[in-house]
Length: 320
Length: 85
Image (cartoon, rainbow over the protein chains, first blue to last red):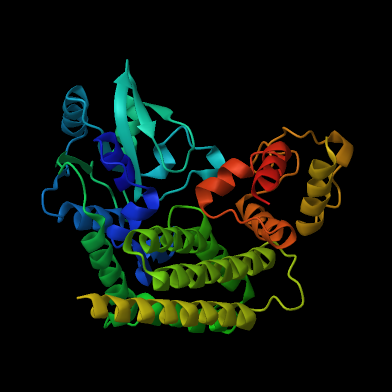
């Protein structure tokens, strides 16, 4: 999202770099926010956080607005597009007709970029689709005002001021520092590495606490949150690893390359857990696919991530 | 269907326990995942296919968007493996 918005305005930046300098990696197990009646598990910071972090870079200014009325929200979108400004929108996936029916469900924190309008249709760059897509105005308006948890309330945003170029070094350091603080230093037991361990502990007890059927439902939900809807556990670990790899070249720092490799291993371990969970949910579990084995897998992710972020934290301290 | 595509089809059927699929009726460009797929596979199957492909061919699909593109059909999956292994 952020990379898309920046690139449209002439700042070439990879998605991984925007994700990294925006402090995008995160883990949160948030049972008090319900998605389809199940606790929210998120593996990345909210897009708003990444954009705010980028907007706080000297020389960058972001315009952001929410609305009460659909007509006002759509008129403001049209005004921005008329001045050739690509616009980020928060939407509800369920109302976007270009999503296959199988992928449409009530998730309201889906972000996309609108970059034009032809007739009654908006031209959209959606991170889920490799090609640009189109959406009729009335559907987009509905998606912008979807109700329920994380309701977007017409939220739109764009960068209205940017420097000629971004000096990557200090931004890389700041981005890593932000993620280390989230992953290691949060006082809340549901956040960061502590949150990963909390999920492992909870998940290991689900069959006893909830009964087998409900445990499998919860498991399916965690996996879908992990791999499907832009909260992807493995995927975002791989993206952050790509950011560290790119940063290793810029900063000429081999430790970042090593951390990138370790985080890729963490991503693979998240995927290993997800594959095991998928087999359980689909009723083709192997003898070793047990809830305690899955909890063990998540604990290994916590170990790997703790090691990576402790090393990164020490590296940042040494540079400042 | 080329030999790699055939091999992948068999691997997918084994991985996802698809015993009742008539392999001769599956084409290289048929959708692999989703309601239009003749295999009847869904996103949880897709995840398992991605992990199995990584184990068997050493090729990682490293973001959900890549998986969506790569797992469109046997032809796209085979091409991705050829290009990245």
